Amino acid sequence: MSGLSRAFSTDFMLYAAAGVLILIMLGLIINLYMELSTIKTRYKRMMEGSEGESIEQMLASHTSEVNEIADEQRKTQHKLEALDELVKSSITRVAVIHFDAFEKTGQGLSWCIALLDRNNNGVILSSICGLETERSYVKPIEDGRVADNYKLTREEEQALRQAMKSL
Image (cartoon, rainbow, N blue to C red):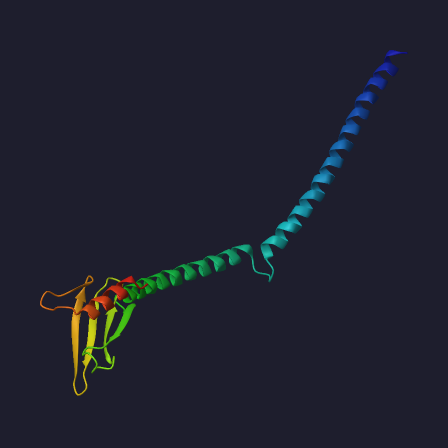
């Protein structure tokens, strides 16, 4: 082979290799372009949302809704705390005792009722009934005890113990 044909074949080999490389690169570029086109289509679809609004608009809307719900929850929590304080002072413990204040004459019509809150504060109401008379009494209760200037009857003490055991 002569030098010219050898140079021609070497140049041809280089050009052929470069051509193959260019075709491979062109194939890769076309493949990347198609993948990019698919990604762009998906991105546009995602950014538009279900009703044509953008994801930014949806996020802003949802953020606004979450803030409103958080405010509502705080208000509800304050109301719940106020109701809890109200319930603490509400009458929740009750006991009623019926008894015969006078042997064979009261017919079991006398009664006492203990009305207490969660902290065992409240009153004991008593009604002593005889054949021709009826007397009513109210005695304050604090922390499960009657004030020093009052005395509880046996039935009132029983009603107080029963009420404190309830709930």
